[in-house]
Image (cartoon, rainbow, N blue to C red; front, side, top):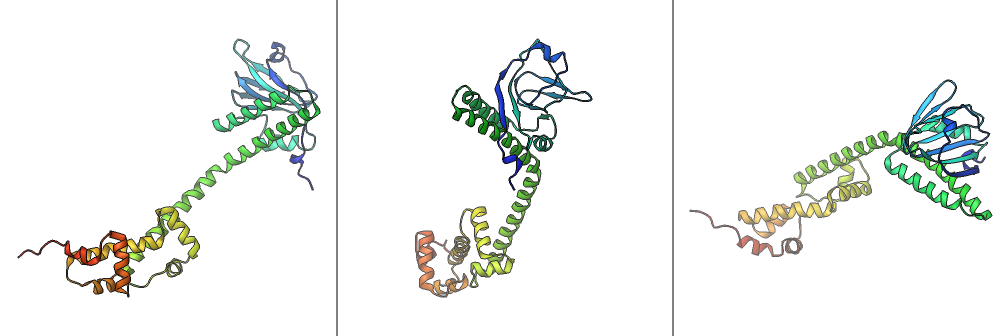
Length: 280
């Protein structure tokens, strides 16, 4: 079944409206729905038993056959983009979804985007071909759907921010646990799979989180920890290269030497020569 909101509304008229002073003094009824985007000025919309305030960048909706009065300050500039439209399949649902006649809970970026779309609609509406009319109706439909999208995003924003904060805290905890484990067990054979199993997460997830949070891979971090410890032991001078290789998790001292040289730019034996002389 087609979603009623997917049906394109019939756009009766659209343009920039400078209100006649009569409309701020008299209650009146329109045969079609009205859509206003306030470009300049402020409006106080009165129904029979309620009234609403709207200002620049706000949207105003007036249902068809609804008695109302548009009270605005005639001493200042009051200008709106105004559309008259029919949307029998979805207008009531749209009105309910946006929460009433005035839509004011939009960000400045969202207001600017809607105004841009309405500027384009205004330009489309000046042409006279059938295709331009269809394009105008499609663009106006897009404007209405954008309003719903933005309101939904704004409503969900607090929950989304909370989810992001919780995710960030979880990721930071995960990174801390990985680093703590490596600092204590770097001399043992370690793999991504082993660390992931220890933390009860998937290897893919652990790898992705570590990369995104640290800026380098888990294997690079493990190598860095091992090499720094190897450097400390070499400068201490109490162990030979083979013993140090084993102490930092390398069974093959030749491979250890290659990794060390690639990491520091010199061999382990050269590094050991740089240790300060012992004081007697």
